[in-house]
Amino acid sequence: MTRLLLLGGTSEARDLARQLAGQVDLTLSLAGRTRAPELDGVRTRIGGFGGAEGFARHLAETGTDAVLDATHPFAAEMSRRSAAVATRAGLPYLMLRRPGWQPDPEDDWIRVPDTAAAARVPGRADRVFLATGRQTLPEFARMRAARCWCRQIDPPEGAFPFPKGEFLVGRPPFPETEEIALFERLGVTLLVVKDAGGAASRSKLDAARALGIRVVMIDRPDLSDLPQVSTVAQALTWVEELPCPSDA
Image (cartoon, rainbow, N blue to C red; front, top):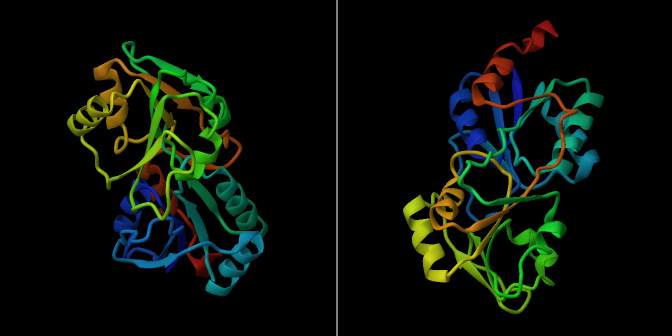
């Protein structure tokens, strides 16, 4: 049976884990950035590998036959490292990267290349909802916004890292109606979001459209040089076509 390492953290990874369970010798690897990640009924490891050397050692020690990368579309460093290490080890590697979002005619989007550019957009009167993750907060410390909020799954371990900001705690999914109510209550005038793609987190964009809120859309890193597919079905086909270990 093929021993597959699935690098997870996305809804697509959870879907793959459910469908591949029992078909391959599967290990789902999660970064462990939330305190209580939801497991998928398969063998799961939590935490990093210790860089490229640690990842190479893990592949060798576990006898991994192939690597399927279904990490976040913005986890560029991890994807590049995983692809390079797998290639050096002579292992098949594939990235599942869901398509990015596209605006509708009634959307008011500003596309920017990175978080540094996004931080320069808000004006002094803007009330900003930062949907970019707490890891990006230092890059927004000097923006001129009147107020901002950042939502995370786990309760914060400390105070917001700069004035005029506040954490919100919530666990997805967030229906569009709830997002509309939240944005109205906060008086949000600007939504800052990474182009992560996917239906699960699209609701905040739909809410922004409904309320006429401007959106700053941060472009995803260019990983077009890595072998990749865009759907779960395509990834499953790739796994099905992997050579059996005895055939390699």
